[in-house]
Length: 107
View 1 (tube, rainbow, N blue to C red):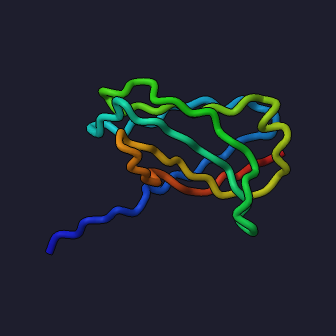
View 2 (cartoon, rainbow, N blue to C red):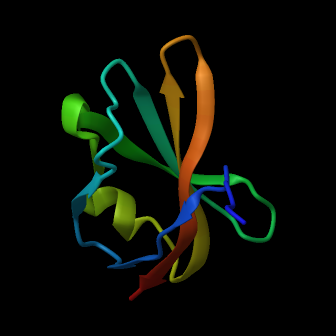
């Protein structure tokens, strides 16, 4: 029997306070032309927003998304474990959580 899932993928992130974070995520073969993406870091305890991750669809036809946090942003994060998620809005305002996971911040 086949299974279809609409659940987001899982991706854990680890970073050192004060270091820049810059990476790309490849969703190929999904085409993301015309999509907007957002990503946030949240408290695992309260769910409140801790930090917004800079995001962009850097190569829509090939499904590539860029994520970035500046040195200033990561320096402001207390050491600990947080949640994070990446959502995309398809043309026509169809929203989906594409990825989620934890962020481990070390000193």
